[in-house]
Amino acid sequence: MADCITQFNKFHENIKLKEENEVLKDKREIIIKKINEKLPEETDYKFSVFNQGSYAMYTGIKPLDDDYDIDVGLYFEMSKDDVKPVEAKKWIFNALEGHTNDVKIKNPCVTVTYAAGYHVDITVYAAENSDGKVYLAKGKPSSNADDKFWDESNPKDLIKTIRENLTDEKDRKQFRRVVRYLKRWKDNNFTSVNGKPTGIALTSCVYHWLDIQKETDPFDGKTIYKDLNALINIVSTMISNFVNELVLIDGEYEYMTRLRVNLPVEPKPELFEKMTHKQMKTFKEKLEDLLIVLEEAKEKIDPSEAAEILQKQFGDDFPIPTKSATGKKAIAPAVITSSESASEKS
Image 1 (cartoon, rainbow, N blue to C red):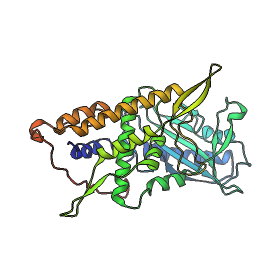
Image 2: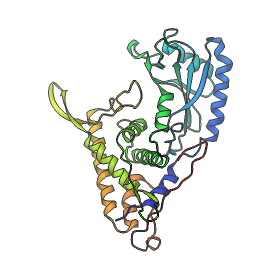
Image 3: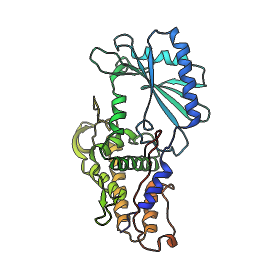
């Protein structure tokens, strides 16, 4: 059977976000400088800056369309009772207005988009509250009153939890690889933003349900990580966690299938909640198609044939070895021993 260990290793290297986009790093520093210079006109509250998102969690992948982004969090030394959430976001908007032709207040953040297409998302937090919790500013100026609120959020706890998942360092690397594989699968199989599962939802599925797949050679003691088996494991587990729910549709109750997963840190929101029943049905069907392909590839003897099947799900970054390279038979598995640097973890 074809484990395609070499191909998955190369695929991971092809899609892994090894470092932040250098241009965006410079833009971020300029943005923070502008906020520091102009914010005193709006408020006396101090703030600290931190990176968030998939790069900070060591699960980032290269975007297919080169639409790189950086997620920046601002922890303000204030209580959510000190200022309304949209007003706090206006501080950032006013400081950055005119920096580019496209600065917008969105529901969860303020976004600065550059002509080249990449963007910086800035989120505003009230971090000094009597209950010890951190709150994220939600809403836009045009939002209804009910949609303007401070939402409990723990971005630093989330980053730490995902980074430090699993005690064994090599197990942790497989966890990160599987997250990246599913993210690229998502980008390759969902053409519209609507109905596309979020990266953090897929990450949370892997966090909660992945069973690490590895084998130890009894003779030399080397551990071989089986990423194809790990994908079969997590995808089949996700499918098995879909449940039928009785839903009122057009005045009649119908059973609809649904997957639910919670963020692993407080307040532990359900991450597929915004997907419609139709979108959820499509999501399950695509997962079932993926599982069929994974299991079919596993049964192949020739890694080239297995890789051809897998590439249809994962895209052109998944390499197909030549027949001559594989000798028309399954190649011996290689132990994955990728190193970790201080700036980006495997």
